[in-house]
Image (cartoon, rainbow, N blue to C red; front, top):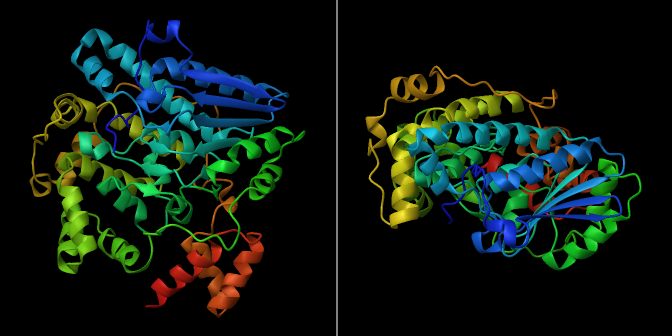
Length: 436
């Protein structure tokens, strides 16, 4: 896991890249436009200089009739491992830099909303490490392509922040309580798991990506459905044998049973009572995280499930005006990233934090000065193009009411999803779990 997985870093006057290749490459191929994150030695970690390249281009392409498709991808072994948290901490410590940091957060959250509401088809290629801000840049795209190299995670709790960049929206929309589990544990989801979890819409072998990009560039009038059908041509075949699928069966059922609780103390009690190796490993992971961060993340994922995209981003924007100034964020970054030591959280235990007073009143209902303004006015509660992904548990259970047998339900979804890989595996897993 990388600890550079948090929001973008603002660096006015940053000159390091001026004598070398740009930190974001812009490429055009017929109607296709590509944003290529180009800091491979830093795992394409985002700073404000990069945002100042990405966002104006996105806005220009959205307004252009010549730009038919937008790609986001990275060089090296990552799409994006996040942002540079050391610079964020330095900005927090220097009052003279607070305004720059405020500009950074305001711009980032407007851009995330813009990415989610673009009319131009937007494709995020998660070929490698995709964490923190990288996850946010992908999770609102209509097309989120996973490969055998994908490693997706939201590890902010490990350094005393909270799962941000829209995680309150996209983690809370995952099946059951999978999002709460991922947020609390910083679980890394690899390969096909990203497709089964709903983090990705398509699974394409990395060896086919270049040909896929060429095919998409040929589309003269690229509607979202046309883009989807083109990507399907390059997806793995229906009979593809997946790697180890870990988010299913009994462990997946344990996630829902244990993480359904409002309070993290009750989640931990449920894990302890379960007593399985999965539950023990989950408890160990949570206990290494900042208790404050774990509770804030759990609360905002639960709240986010009832909010729209705009409302989720506004909630996180408010949290960014309080959480980073608390003890644990500076302690977490200084210990993990700078000194390579174990942080000393304060408070050090989940039970030392009262959910109402210490979390809701102090962070969620704090008086803050800034309000978030959006370039686009569109809003939604569910991703508009979720039909391109595998069916959700809710969809599967609804169809099962009509098509009584598992086989008939599988057949219905395989026809509906055009023989998409993963349909059979997911439908069978959901129905088996729900019937046991």
